[in-house]
Image (tube, one colour):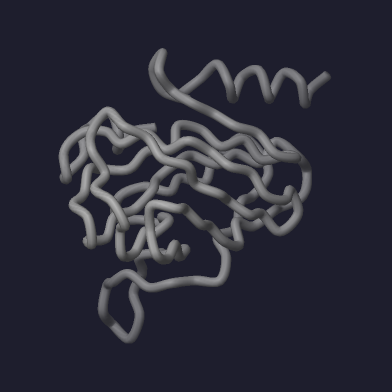
Length: 155
């Protein structure tokens, strides 16, 4: 019963507005995947909110999309005294009420070598693979300006 209450609360709260999208695979809930507009042949990123409603941690281990030549998991942190972005093998998702936020200036799915422009108002498929939960395809909404909006930054 607690689990059902948690799922209901997760889906009812901060998932976004009326047009928000979500998906679920295993114990992982993926909320409101979005990306900023970008030109063809440039790079972009996909952002989302990940919630583990189970009791064991999971990991996002890979991503792929037909709109990019390559999709990598990236984080921002300090390496050798320099703050910057770099690829990682996995992004951990801890169980419980706290969400793992993939957002600007933090962990994200890097879309390298776009095959087409990402235009505001459109969407594209993104395949996410989790170590335990498995593989799921989500629809990523292209929103806002290149800099994003306050709504996008606050989940």
